[in-house]
Image (cartoon, rainbow, N blue to C red):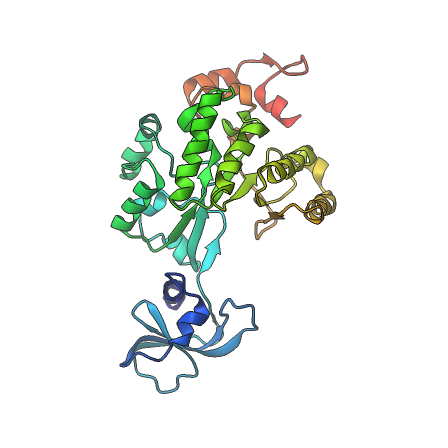
Length: 365
């Protein structure tokens, strides 16, 4: 129970830093209120997010604000917890989550809050907007199963619904490039027309005005894998006009990672936009041991003037869905897990090298 309360206290600390305030700003007014505190956490290790070493002390909460930090011996509170040996910290930020719909299903989001996560960044490939009537129909089975409604079409609409229902989690989002392509081009393996690309860029422009952080691609998965680099550059330029960034689950994280890095560097350069490589890793035995070279390439790009960064999982394993191993020709124009897709995957086909293969064998080559 104490751990649960500590996680919820993290949410309170984040709340204290809302509306543009920093933790330092919040603490500057600490102690100005009068009366008993709602909660005092005593004898904890305080890690305040400033970068300074941890220090021992107490934290007092009144309502959804930090009321005091320091040694508060004898402070009156409705509840006092001795958290000796535990850390009291601002809420953690999950840099790549997928809770945007779960927040509408169960706004308590215990799986996040109980780990101290109070803010999540989402929008990798797919995002809550833009939505079209056709895409909402595609989601109808999920909505029936989980009892939620997609009543919005843009970010303003989504956040209005989220605010109405309430959420323990702060959610920030990118514009998912896959989502934009689905809204305009659909699931087909083809390039957008000039008019379609203009419409896609306009969608990014609108969603950036509504608070999106940038554009995020997931190029390993269909239908995003059908996108040419020029299409992504156009969307990145639309985000750049609003100070956004480009983030990418790269097109390849295995033996062709150099090509994928080249693409990220080109997009950053031609769109003049900061670029973030999401969950940087190397997949497959043939790639083991190459990470020093990959990091050296990123360092070289930065030295050449590109604003390129990368992030990693906090663990040493990675996983994804099985459809990542299915080649693009097997998924073009067909919803995932549809009977037609299964039939197509079970039929031998002549691969790009002229050999007859099944999809799994071709993807593994």
